[in-house]
Structure formats: C-alpha cells, structure tokens
Image (cartoon, rainbow, N blue to C red; front, side, top):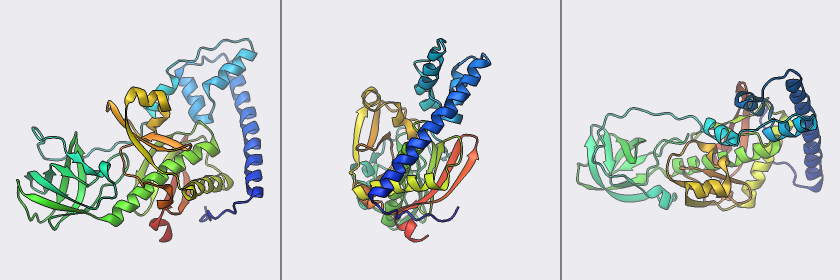
Length: 346
C-alpha cells in the first residue's frame, strides 16, 4: 500500500461523503450478516459460546443481532450473560516475560515516579540492591517494559541504563560500568527523546484503536500492540483487510482527534467501579489483575485500563501515519504506524 496522506480537507463535502459511505457499509454489513445467521439457523447449528465467538470475531456479528433475527423466525436463542466478559478476557493482548537472575525477596515495591509525572526527566533515589548489571532503586522514573511498550533508557550516576524490567512490584534496571554501590544516593536521567516518542506512540495506539472501531464496526478489539521508537504496530480483530478508503478514514479520524487537543484524563479506580462506569472494553490493552485500575481516558473518544506512559494532550502526539496494513492471521489485522517525530522521519 502506498504511503497515505493524512491531510484530508476538512470540509462539509468530506463529512457528507463519510456519512454516506458509512450508511452504505452499515446496510451492506447487515444484509451479509443476516444471510450468515439464517444459514446457520437452517443448518440447525447450536449457537453456543464457540459459535457465537466465531461469528463475532470472524464476521463482526453480535449476539444481539443473532437474537433479533432468530426472534423474527420464532426461534428463541439464549445469549450467555458473560459473553462480552469472555471476549474481553480472550483479547487481553500479548505478554512477553523475560527471566531475570536477581532475587527480589524482601525488596520493597519500587515507587513509580513516572506515574506521578511522565514529563519528569531527572530524579534522585537510593540503591537498594546490585547483582551483576542489575540495579534496584527505592524509586524510579524509568518505565519498565510492559503492556507492549518498550522501556526507557538513560543513565544512573553516568552509568548507561539500556533496559528496564519489572518483577512483581520491583523495577530492575540494567546498567553497565556501574559507578555506585548499594546504599548510595544516585541521580537518574531519562533519555527524554525516547520517552517522548514512546508516549506519542502509546497514546496514538489508543486513538487508532478507537478510530478503527468507529470506522470498521463495534466488533473491533485490540488483539495486541507493540510500541517502539521507529514504528509501532496495532493488531485488531476484523474479518478482512480494510480497503484504502477505510484506512484513510481511520487515519483522518485519528489525526482529527489529535488536532482537537483532547486532554488525557488519568485516574486510579477500584476494578468494580471502573467496569461499572466504562464496561469491559477498558481491557483493550491487556489483563490487569490489580484491584485498582489505572484508567486512561480521552473524553468522548476512548477509555482503557492502561499502565503505560502517555502525552497529557493529544496535540502533543503530532501527525499519525498508517504505513502499512496487513493480515497476520484469520480475523487479525495489523496496522503499522508512526506518530510525531517518527512520522517526520518517514
């Protein structure tokens, strides 16, 4: 696919075209879905969890639509009350864990300063433990690898920090040529250009996921995501590769959201309260076993439970560009994209 130009003219004609296309797509999708459901009914196939999930993920057919069509044929179908809960649990994203040779027993939980202020570049901390090139501090601004986001780099007392991992609540820094010892007070410095790019890509991931759902249909979920500094990717559930016009619509909607300057509203909420207020779609970014969830909300556009670092305003993301779209497996579509400085380098 050729490089797409996100600078779509914002005029009334564009808006009318988008609305017309969406209406046509809706009726075409409904007609196609109805035929599929009627075919299943004629074959007397049971609408169990497996079949419902297959229809939802492969064709974007919701249980409610199946129930309505079956009702018109005087057929009663019982939809499991936990259907969407099961779907959310299934699409919790990919997790990758690395084994770290360091004993963290009796080490207190690391204070995560990057949650207090993701724009903070320097900090002071006490060295709690050193094992080879592994360093544990009492607090840190370094974000560890997690949630599909690559870690921060930087330095501790001049020693280069080249990786960050988390074991339970303890954050482990990988550093070389250590110039400090256990018990020392040290100064940490974040590689700000890297942190900024990762924040731009992470918030852009949320925006693209929501934009894809609005353009392609409510069945779209984030399957997994990977945020790096050069390019990032977002895998979504959808039954076919979007055509070029749909991709342009997703890109246009994403960049329009950036231009609107939506402020990121971040808060910690008890799990039950978060689920009641926002539903199970908050789990787009992956499983979060904590009793208290960190909720990242772009008002009237997207809300997710997320532990990553984000820009405080969508205007700080810069231009989002979808570089490539590809099918990675049945029902999974990958969007390769850039944002901010990474887009300027393309």
